[in-house]
Length: 595
Image (spheres, rainbow, N blue to C red):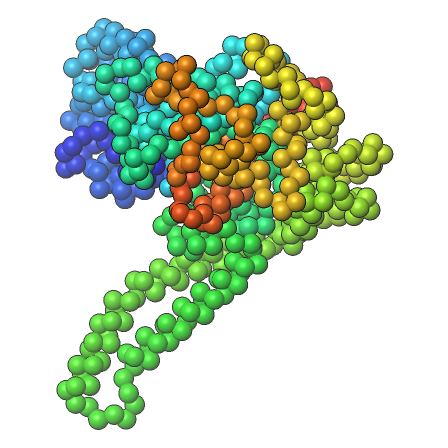
């Protein structure tokens, strides 16, 4: 995942060139390449493909776009107008033959085919946010896959898009994994289609996968664990009090960037990625611990600055001699050398002080600490005192904070008390909250859990599972472990260990490298040192953090990459639940939020 993306496609970096991308590919590049990096590669100008552009003669243009009809037509138009000297076309995934033929016939008819220098399939249809975190940036997949009115064709198209994204990730890592997933639902559909795509690709002579692979330079193949968001609904809704998850959920971290109110007024934009040592070291800590750590770093910085000042200030009243001059010169040199490092440290401290100050304001205003604590208690105990429940719903917090809390109450309750649920709905209406999402989850909860066993029959019709929601009711059991370890890391750990375990014994196994008949052999069950965990329907930093914590506590060391169809805040996921509620006929469809 950490391989540098060279979108230029040309070896000679001295040539000045222009970069043209679409919105999707701009998002791919954004977390990986800064403007200064583009300049190093000779890129002097960069534009969106759908914007009107003036001709720049004698300069090659590098296109990095998705392979779709509108982009192809734009490229043909640009070539026919001779906007640039040569065209180097880089597509984010494999170009279908029909579109290649369109390029050929379009440029031939305008007599500009000689301008097309190269066409590359880059297999980069995913956004890398960190070394071990990626997103396919496919919006609203949870709504699309769970929409009761969705037809076979629509579901197949969504599954196909997810498979293409995952194939690109595997091609970039150069590994063919062993695939595991629960039976039924979107997870099995994606796993089965990906298995077939990999089998078909491995039959071609020039396939993208080498035996060794570059994934942690290990000869053992990784396991790809595919899940559907319904496997554990609560993680997408709950309030979390860890730093990275809070920054994302409350301040809207997007593509590793974030804008907050500056200390002196006005908006400030910050980058939070692997180049920020404080973010890397403290992302998994609870917010109060982060505040203490900022204070510690600030005091250490002040101490180091005082030390530099003391060393370079000379010694009062000392006689001047040559040795003193030599010593002072040495101290001055050390001070000069340490200045860039001290300045950088101060910038990082100032940045996180600013972010923490804004977060603290939100926490106090919305009582976020109380939401996080009480939700956690509900999940552990499976119940909450009624007065406490209604007290939270009538207290501080935004409408959506209260809605999230109410849904967490529904999910975590071992049994549904009808009177209590009605009083919760009344409290939500008092706060003028659209209860469609609450009604939707209540409907899922009330469905008979026996539908969980309907997997074999439902596979005959691929939309059955969307109508029956059995995956959710089955997944509710995952939420009630006494130590509140999330179900996902617990299941991934079991899949990596490969020991018999009732939780995963009925999980399906696919190995694209073996004949289909022999795919039950024991080596496919592990143990595995490396895993790629993929969540269909949206993931977040809570889940990513839980997998990182799992890896930190493992001996010997293991490696886990986490990916999802899109990274969602709690509010964004609630909006998708609300939309599904409207599609099911709950609430008023006029108030539907746009996901």
